[in-house]
Length: 138
Image 1 (cartoon, rainbow, N blue to C red):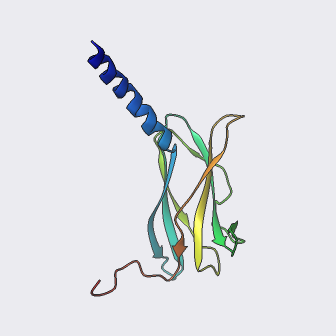
Image 2 (image 1 turned 45 degrees about the vertical axis):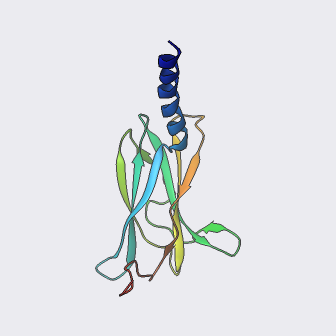
Image 3 (image 1 turned 90 degrees about the vertical axis):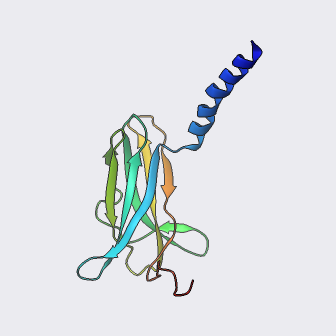
C-alpha cells in the first residue's frame, strides 16, 4: 500500500518543480540579416507560454565597462506596450543601435492587471560584423 502512494507523490511533485524553472515569456534570436540597402537587422521570437495575456516592452542595450545601458537610438516600436495573448508568438524586427558593435535586446513583461509584477529577459550578446559561420577546417 505504501509503494503506490509514494509513486503517486513523485508524479504530483515532478511537474511542480519543472514549472518553477520555466518563464512565462520566451525570447530567442531567430536571424540576423541585412535590409536591401545593407543595414543590419535582427529578428527575435517572443512567445507567451501561458494561458493569460501579457504586455511586453523591448529596448536594445549596449555594454559599458560596468554594465548594460539602454541605447540612445532604438528600433521602431521599442519601449511601447505590446500585447501577447495566451499561446501567441510574435516576431519582431530590431535594428541594432547606431554605432554599436555589441548589443542585446532587453525585454520587460508583465501579465495584464493593475498590480501585476514586471519581470525581464535579455537576449544573448550580439556582435556586429562577426561571422556566425565556422572557419574553414574547423
